[in-house]
Amino acid sequence: MNEVELKQQELKKWIKKLFKSQKDFAQQYYMETYVNYDDEDLERFYEAFKGHLKRKTTDIGVISKYLKFLFDSQEFRDSESIKPEFYFLNELSNDFNLRMKKISKKITDHLIESNAKNIS
Image 1 (spheres, one colour):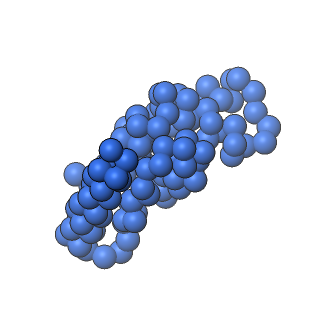
Image 2 (cartoon, helix red, strand yellow):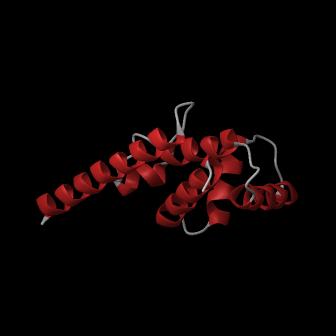
């Protein structure tokens, strides 16, 4: 799996967890990002957004913008989720990036488990 596919998968996972649907996320992103819009523009954006989630050739920066928006959203804050510290990729080796992602996931899982025990 390449870098773009990893980010697409991460974005889809978070959207599923925090929003009703990909369409709801796209609508919120569009309405908060663009000043002038109408229903036709929104529908065109949604179709482009679906393509961004599927195509292996999508610019990684586009997916990164969506992730940043998601992590800054009220839905994310309300979920009391923990923002992954390593949700981005950089110019370091793919092996390093994958290892950092696994470490970050373990830490996140541990924190979620600890919070659940403290609430009980």
